[in-house]
Every structure is written in C-alpha cells, then in structure tokens.
Image 1 (tube, rainbow, N blue to C red):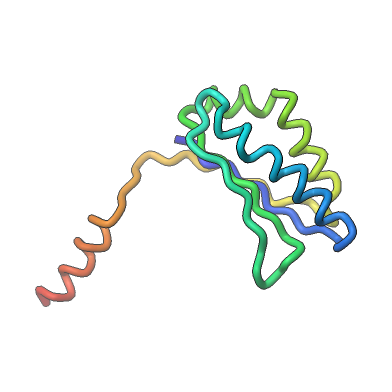
Image 2: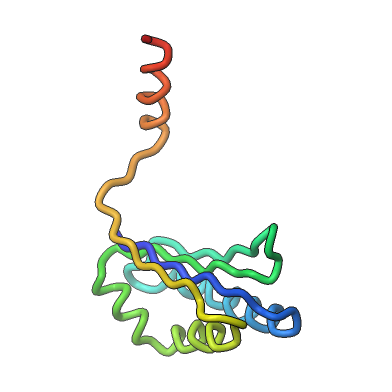
Length: 111
C-alpha cells in the first residue's frame, strides 16, 4: 500500500478556493481504480493549512493518478500555496490495529 500526502499553507484569501478545489476531488478520487481512501483535513493550530491524503493499492495505481487530469487540480492548489508544499509518499508493508495496543498494554499488566 502507498500513502500519499500533500500539506499546504495558504494566505487567507487563497485558502477557501484551494479548499474547494481539493474537497471536490475527495469523493471522485475515492472511486478511482486502486484508491483505498482519500481525505482532506484542515489544521486546527494553523487554520489556513490543508492536508490532502490518499491511500493506494499499488505504486502503479498512484502513478496513474499522478498522471491523470484530476491531479492537475491538486497541482493547481499546490501552486496557490504560500510556500512549497510538504509532499510525502510512503510504502506501507504492514498494517495493524487494536491488537497492537492490546499486546503492548498486556506487557504492563504482566510486569
């Protein structure tokens, strides 16, 4: 699985426009082949900051999305940012959930 994220900071008068561009992409991206999820978050401590995240089944799925017309709108939002965006692509080889917390906490009880 590939996790892709783009964090962007905007001046106040560009923020709403950029947010609307990215928000419109969230639902349509979720229906793109190979997409496992897509979300947009707004910063609490930095309210003019947005985090656009996606999860992809394979690198090929992500690459296809990066070449797509909809991704041009992500690039447009990045160009509106007040500084270079923080872009990260991470390959995830293992996912765990509640069992990790239970395992870690059980060692406290057994000590």
